[in-house]
Length: 94
Image 1 (cartoon, rainbow, N blue to C red):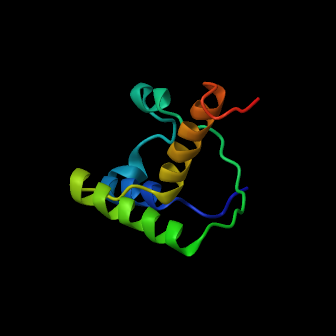
Image 2 (image 1 turned 45 degrees about the horizontal axis):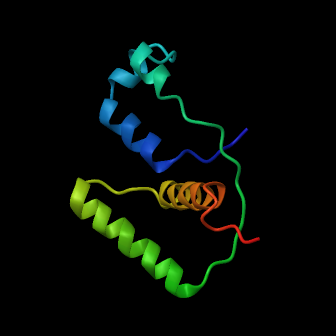
């Protein structure tokens, strides 16, 4: 069992306040549609300038949306784009 609770979940719980104590733990129907995918924790090494770039993107998204985007979400988006690039045949050589 994962002991760490994502910050986004803690913020949601904090916003619900006392209501969270009295509501059933089963999510409502609209929230069930947005159930998160199972994630796998991995470790990768990236260059320092990539860390800075990721933080700049995160800050820009916060200014644009008014809320902080999780770095994991940004990395997932980058990997999805990379996969689409290679699966689309643009990055294959041969």
